[in-house]
Length: 317
Image 1: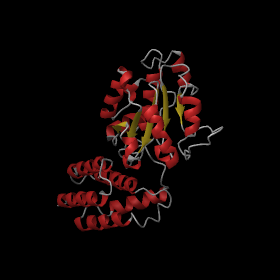
Image 2: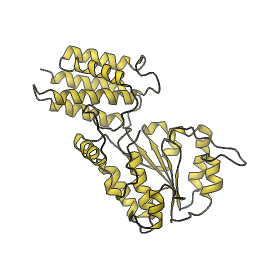
Image 3: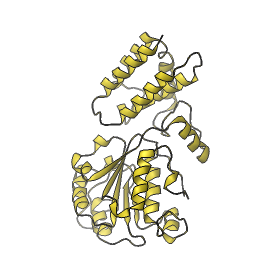
Image 4: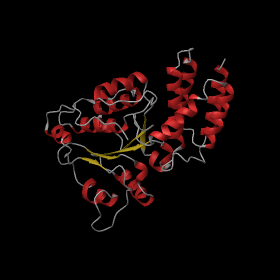
């Protein structure tokens, strides 16, 4: 689940640890006429994609153009009643909808009752899909037509973890904005600001809720018993690759990339807390792997894992 600061009064600069994404979004807040019909925020869960979507939307919709917090638009946005900010449900499938009287939050409802009209309060309308993978195939086809024919005052934001989950026809009509894992210092700064305790092993992301404590403990035990010996590291590599097809502790919504993120976060934590020697090179290799994991390496995860463990084994003395 994405971490979002509720009723956040700050401007777009409140987005921490995402320098490249922030550069894109700040530029678009200055040159609003340059905003493309579709922006795709992609990257690991729990690193601020939805928070960025809210900050950016508030800034674009602001009547003074700078998230002033005092105009009618900002006040309505903070109360979550802004008519020009449409946030689709995060955990529901999105259908095309009936031709006549389509249900709310279907694509035909969007086309017939929102997109065709001018915004009510602001100069722009922003429509956010918190999980664009929930748009079914028929609805996605209908969205292509909307994107091709959209007016200048309506902009869309898709939020996804894996950019490859979207069709190339959608991606070709968008500007893709990448989000990366957060550094330990940025995570600490954010947790201090919002008062959320983050376990030390959960490096790089605020996504905590997809596994129960028993699975966390098992994964941590597997890691701690393996990473300080080259033979055990090779056994851990074999277990990790095998877990892609046999994952009894992760019974629902298994995602191999998220699993790899989880295991490497635990490895970083275990190296950090061991004071017997300097593991900085191993930690650097793990952070490099985590960043590569969410780039364009579709179906190359096993190769990347092998490369990572070859590097880690070479660093064991």
